Length: 275
Ligand SMILES: C[S@@+](CC[C@H](N)C(=O)[O-])C[C@H]1O[C@@H](n2cnc3c(N)ncnc32)[C@H](O)[C@@H]1O
Image 1: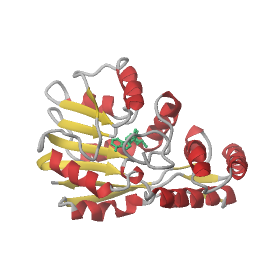
Image 2 (image 1 turned 45 degrees about the vertical axis):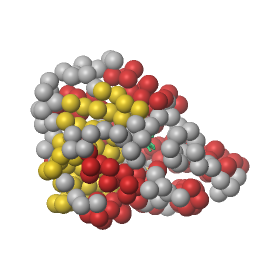
Image 3 (image 1 turned 90 degrees about the vertical axis):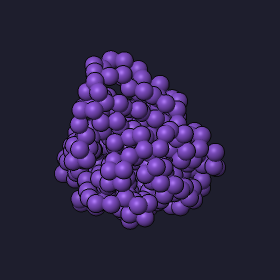
Image 4 (image 1 turned 180 degrees about the vertical axis):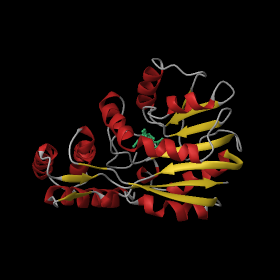
């Protein structure tokens, strides 16, 4: 594990896992999930599709996928972190879909799964956490059958903004980008995703941009919660002091209650790309 990482075996994952991170990932799906599902439909997801949900997290999208592919399809949900998979499985046990989901502890760099075995590979917010994201795009390419489709959304952290501007958000975004630099990852990787997919051999690449914004409601606080989870790693990597970060979080909580301030959540650039 690289210095600074919070717990994921193979790379530099700075967010909470298991029960501690589950509510934030559910909220994330409320903010971005509609766009993800639209992209999966655009990709041709249908009854009989064989789908890999790679870095499935708590499985926010896996059960929905299982509902789409019918009894003749297949959904494999993989994540490197067993605590994420435990939450995904317990949530799944309460769902009603026509096929069981296959859960697998798997490293996205080297899944060990058979080549050409999926019609759709889905990855959301994985690549920005990796030091070598292009290797994982190549692995997704290997796993897809010819004509299979990659559906991928990733992050442009620097796109978070408030109106009127908030110094607290501006500072936290700067610190987040600085932490990424220290850890060898790029929290703006999303903007490089289309070119990286082209470099891996994908064709007919359709590009999507999703940036929801809120004046009120729990969704408005998604990035506040995300930043809060990064505090221990920011402190450990020397990006900022706990005192400064706690003060920024206090200001962010005040902004959440102020219905005159708009918060634009991070833009997720995404692609639907054909092998
Ligand atoms: C931000 S979460 C996104 C989860 C899910 N895709 C979603 O959108 O709700 C990123 C996930 O990537 C997983 N992860 C990090 N590095 C990984 C790796 N090398 N291989 C597989 N999963 C990994 C983490 O454990 C975490 O569950």
